[in-house]
Image (cartoon, rainbow, N blue to C red; front, top):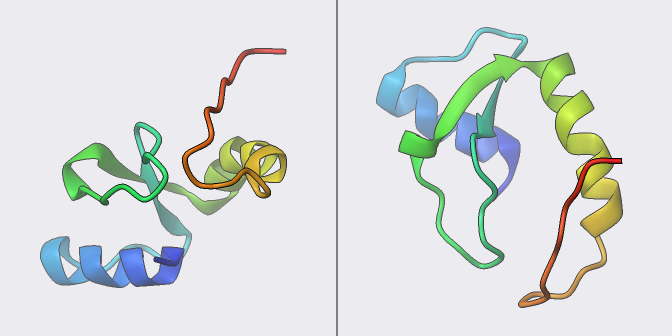
Length: 73
């Protein structure tokens, strides 16, 4: 599911997001898992990209079911 699709679903449930708002999870989704709006929050788009971008770059080629360990650098 794309970010835009999630934003639209949330908009129907809670009202539309501000133009610079992005729906972000407060915890990672398990690969192949479900999306739950109770564990999501709206953040500024630039902040969301700064947080999620580096993680996405590192895990984009990880196959489903693989174990991922994240740590601070």
